[in-house]
Image 1 (cartoon, rainbow, N blue to C red):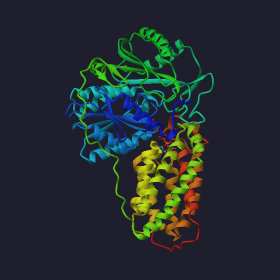
Image 2: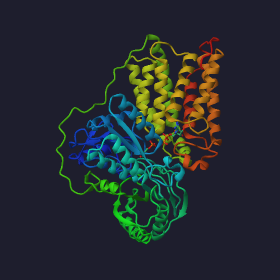
Image 3: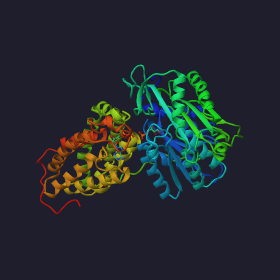
Image 4: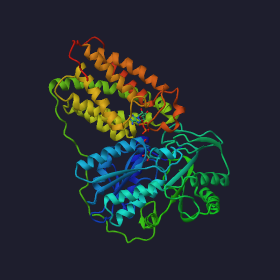
Amino acid sequence: MTWIFNRPSDFAKEMVTGFVSAHASQVRQVPGGVVRNTKSRPASVAIVVGGGSGHYPAFCGLVGQGLAHGAAMGNLFASPSSQQICSVARAANNGGGVLLMFGNYAGDVLHFGLACERLRSEGIPCETLAVTDDISSASLAEKEKRRGVAGDLVVFKVAAAAAERGDSLAEVLTIARRANERTRTLGLAFSGCTFPGAEHPLFSVPEGKMGFGMGIHGEPGISELDILSSNALAQMLTRSLLAECPDGVTRPEGARLGVIINGLGAVKYEELFVFWHDVEQQLSAAGVVIADINIGEFVTSFNMAGMSMTLVWFDDELEALWQAPASTPAFSRGSLLPQEPLDAVQLEQSSVIPIAQGSAESQKAAVKVMAMVDALAQTVIAHAEELGQIDAIAGDGDHGIGMERGVIAAQLAAKHALQQGGGVGTLLQCAADAWADEGGGTSGAIWGVILNTLGTALGNNEKPNAASVAQAVTQANAGVMHFGKAKPGDKTLVDVLLPFSQALCAAADKGLSLSQAWHKASDVAQKSAQETAQLLPKIGRARPLAERSLGTPDAGAVSMAMIISAVADCMPVGIDQGSPREKVCP
Ligand SMILES: Nc1ncnc2c1ncn2[C@@H]1O[C@H](COP(=O)(O)OP(=O)(O)O)[C@@H](O)[C@H]1O
Ligand SMILES: O=C(COP(=O)(O)O)[C@@H](O)CO
């Protein structure tokens, strides 16, 4: 459990504020995260890392000279939003472009990808790299699908040292990719983690067992085994890691390796030292050269009991960059002359965007849309625990928490837009940004896209009708598929949104009123959500354990259907009249 907190929902924000004030000589807070508080080499590439909170020292603890220039921080186990990432990247930019780096998680990939596009459109050269060191999360043949865990540190550090020596953005990206290619991690967990104020652990491991290969958000491992002695664990992890030599290395004998023994939260340093004593013997017996060893906490899983072991297969350049000096709140090596502190600068403030006024008709419709937002928020909040339980079957169990955070923020932002005279379009767009910002994770990014597209399509002039809503939902679905790359049948919310949009279009074509069309399409959505139980996930957190999810519907599909149904309940059938029309959707 978590012992020290105020309001659970304030935990991540208060943690960053406390961290910054404790390390003010090295870092300063900006909207969305932290940046170095010391001057950087002018025109050098800025390394901006990030991801969910709850993984300290990832990610804010790794900001400082010789390592990251900035860290974008989301809520607990939820990626930061693209707006938060852009804000940190702008503050960290030294004029040499920005490399965004993160672990390969769906939410991070979506939000950092979007941030990269935005930064480029602002004229800031930008690239992304998703770290993929966790060998338990996908086979070698599909290594681009692997998750990023403690290897994050290695890839961030190598890239930062290359940026520090003056490499261009393209050169930094190349060396970071090589570091990622040559870094492998394997971990395990003995018990789950419990968030502040939560009554139950987010995930758990059966008593006396260990989740071999369990991920840092509790993604179920490859297998559940009886707990072994340190010596047996060392044999198992060393053997598995050495079995995968990177390209260009034919055998472990003689290879120079960097080793990281990483505590995942509740395991003590003393235990890690016992484990290392056993690993060292295994590595020596295998004939490798132990070029460097780090033991401690580098990427954690909040208060989960577990540990991981990372091997970095050095070449001369990687080893030199890894060994280059660095000084951050949580990771230091060598000695560095402290850089001058940054001048007090005008930092980007969370921008207050003026609310575009809606026409009288659209403002009137916005009142109804507000009632729908209230209703969907109530539904999500009431079912948050159930959504988390569905997500925990093969995912990470945080779908309910993330959706709850998202809808509460969306509700507040929508109310503000309505009070300021916004029409339907503005109300939905404000709700979209707030949802993406506060919800984070994959669902935050996706719901941000959905509401933004609906808002843009419906605008602030006309009263929405069956045809305009059907077209808007069709565009929203296209946006989600383009952005998230999920296809029908991949077991995601697309398996509800697509048939829903098609049914809505068909009903609008027949001339049904908006409420009639929505009710009809809602029935299709409910059925489609249940049908996802028969699908195997091909994308997202649940993919590595696809079989476990067979028989259980997809969490995002279920919440999507719930929301559609809550909106339907706000539309009494038969009140507004429709009339036959031209074909509404392509
Ligand atoms: N690429 C994608 N496109 C659309 N929806 C997706 C995609 N990946 C995952 N999802 C949806 O997101 C849901 C999980 O949301 P959430 O819990 O916020 O994600 P995370 O896995 O980041 O914690 C899944 O149940 C699925 O419906
Ligand atoms: O904690 C994380 C959240 O990832 P999502 O994809 O948003 O669930 C991740 O940032 C850790 O690196």
